[in-house]
Image (cartoon, rainbow, N blue to C red; front, side, top):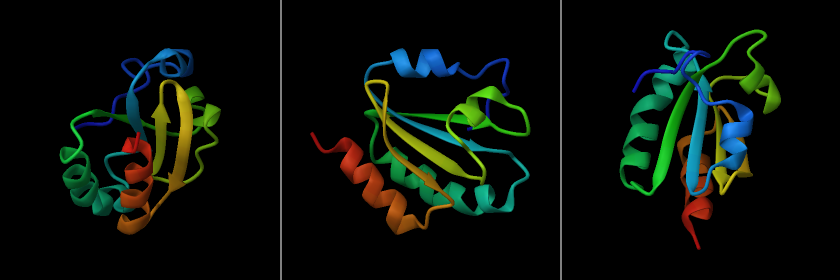
Length: 106
């Protein structure tokens, strides 16, 4: 899955209005931390097809990332029905797994 540039990424208002479970991942294709996290993130989210995964290309002055206060990559924003449930920057695999477990628990 490729990071969406700002012309294809949803807006903050669109994310806030969505229903369901979403993980928004902020990063860039060349980020070493993002590359290292990708196998675990992909495998983890593959076990949760009920969660939509949106990868958004981030960078200086990008309004969507700034609206979530993104400063490090990858940053994961876990949302339920438009509300932020968890936000993690450069999480270790255990922390991301635990956050996703909480997101999917109903």
